[in-house]
Amino acid sequence: TISPPPHFIIFPFMAQGHTTPLLYLSRILSDRGISVTFITTPANYSTIKTTLNPHSISVIKLPFTNNITGVEITDNLPSMSSFVDFVDATQQLQTPFETLLQTLVPQVTCIISDGFLIWTQDSADKFNIPRLIFYGTNIFSMTMCNIMAQFKPHAAVGSDDELFSVPGFDRFKLTANDFDPPFNEVEMKGPALEFLIRQQKAMARSYGMVVNSFYELEPEFSEYWNRNYGPKAWLVGPFCVAKPPAPEVLGKLADKPTWIQWLDAKLLVNEPVLYVSLGTQAEASAEQLREVATGLEQSNISFMWVLKPKQLQLIGEGFEVRVKGRGKVVAEWVDQVEILKHEIVIGFLSHCGWNSVLESMCAGLPILAMPLMAEQHLNARMVVEEIGMGLRLWPNGMVARGIVGSKEVAKMVVELMEGDGGKRVRKRVNEVREVALGAMKVNGSSSSTLDSLIDHVDG
Ligand code: BUP
Image (cartoon, rainbow, N blue to C red; front, side, top):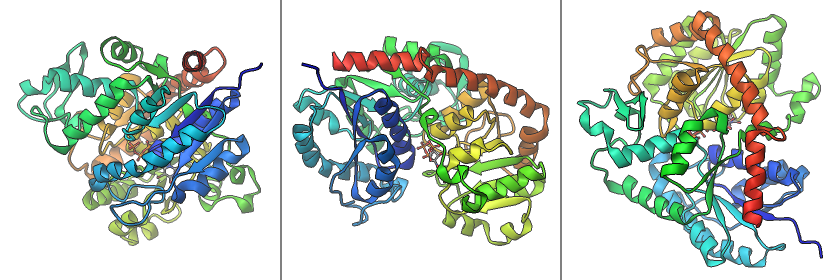
């Protein structure tokens, strides 16, 4: 008899930056003939179903009421402050998830679930199914967090923005400000620590970790991780390479979204555009948003800024009028990858969410880094200091927290778009782009690692 193909269940965390890369990974697996079942919740169901339908990936929704707000979330967390409560609320999905594990045909070979869905490890253990964890970040930042917890190199410095050497990586210097709690604390404590311990316990029982990155990007760190920590990291990205072009972008001019039409018009008059987005989760202060706005206004560079309606309110409507023609403000959801790929877009002012960094890299766009929270500060260090595909917004290149003034924003925007620094990082990002795309091709590092991972879990 011919054995059925492996069957992977993919279960993302309900935040854009966590779900999007797993949608891409589903396609990559499905294209290899693997049966894929994607798990979601009612509010996200129809969008995900439409996205995955053409790939014959089955999408299943589990009932979910968000105990915090009383209603289910749509594509985002209600707010970062209720994060741990929200994570706990996902536990109500456990029973229906386990029923599903028992009934799905063909039998489930492997579970890929988000690191925040801690309880999925219990489900995996119960039915003896290997579980791969997905964290949505790179191995560099995960390694740095573990090193902080293990060696506490920041205990020896006088302040949170004083540099210290990273044990094991002497050439590399960080500050406590590059980390969020509990990693920036010398005496780790509180809910952030408890949450971390719960995750690490589940992690220790997992089969491995799928990482949206590629070996050539961080060889030292992935080897260090596999030697000293664990579970084993399988670097199988960048996943965004699997994103099909949006039909509306390929379509007739009239069908294109207004922001693509605007970019097309900029292309006609050859006015290079800076794309600005500070991501989906982080909340920059009103003061910081205004400084960015004033900086963009003063820079005289063409730009497109995608933000939340609430943020637009904070900046004030006069801004849109003042920059009219040169700058476009978009207060709705866009197809970011399509914008980054647009010929006239030549730079990205980014909060350095890891998906945005990879998408920028794959589009060959240099970044002006403006990290705000989570591991974004570490990502920014990677972008600027390790990879060399970006410039940093802060004056001395080191300060990770605090407000960046409009003058600095204007100066660095011009540097990225027109200066020598910009030329240098643009050249570098195009080299890295080739390696990134190569990793995903047949026999490329990520593609081979994925083959081997499938063999392992299917064995
Ligand atoms: Br905003 C926006 N359209 O309008 P990150 C974002 N995205 O496609 P995050 C859109 O969301 P964390 C929009 O391309 C990327 O894939 C974007 O993920 C897409 O940042 C994703 O960049 C955002 O990883 O935070 O979600 O703000 O650091 O937690 O990953």
